Image 1 (cartoon, rainbow, N blue to C red):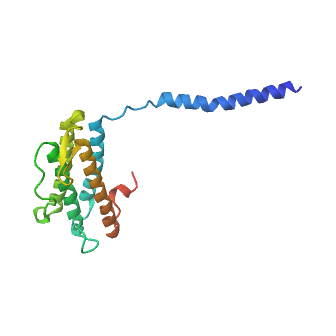
Image 2 (cartoon, rainbow, N blue to C red):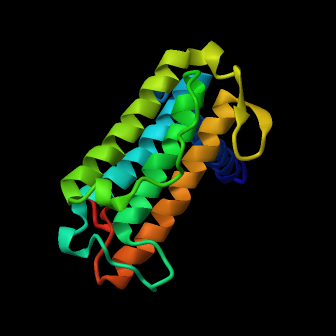
Image 3 (cartoon, one colour):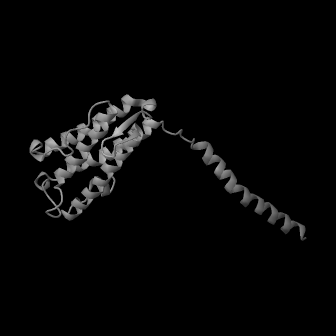
Length: 191
């Protein structure tokens, strides 16, 4: 009599313990691991992602608030975008063997309308993406001289530095949105 309940308990335990292993095996078979991105693909993906966010903000923010400043000492919304986009050319120009821009910040009076600013932001990220594609994987290891630190660095490292720079300005612009009583595009519910 004792054998039947014991045998049932052993069978039940074996079934329960083997189920998670079986479930893990099928999930591994269903979802193949994607290969790692190549060096230039990884840089391009990060470049395009921060570019997409800044372009969305440039297109979305109301034009009548483009000169909004949280405090008098800070840059206006449009100036933040122009600064981030203009800085991209310190990467793009150097990566393509050209001289760094003469000035760090484009002047607001050169980009008077929202459409002008949006076009410049789009162009700066498109030009950077084209430079990354032109350099390719091999070119990510090429050396350039950082005009700010006067030090040699790899093209990929310089690109990541300017991606970080754009990300910092993205974060600042999120604050501008909130202070203006608006919700940034990335914070809105996804449809």
